[in-house]
Length: 197
Image (cartoon, one colour):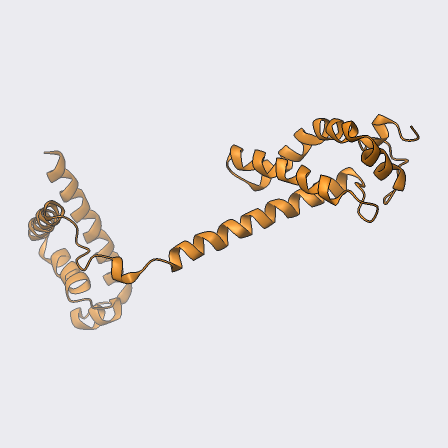
């Protein structure tokens, strides 16, 4: 045999890109391709793991790469080098990621709006819990100092912007922003204290 096992395993730099001898060796001796598979599988798997999060997906992609290589191994496209192998592997993983993205987009687009329930508020129990939460917020809001209470009511219930609030209250906008921030923090503290007691 003109080509040694080591040279077929891409370890010999003397093998040039497009070498017909490599193709002939792999074509005439299928066991060499299995040796090539065993020797390069971990390398291909490491590349696949860089692209794909799940270990199972990386293993599937590595096996698919070798299936492609076996199908691609012709006179026109011989197995060339390790850098070529990493390029083929990377491109295959990118194709898999693109297909997965297209599939997920197709699933989202395929959702029928008619099949969604009319009322998205949830169960009666969740509505009851939401009402209780709102009542707790109202009670905590009532216990805030008047200045903070006014700021939160204007901003969240009346939905005024900071600029509108500054004009309405005759204050500078930075003072209004700071006041809203402090009022929210105080309200959060009161709600947490009420929840733990």
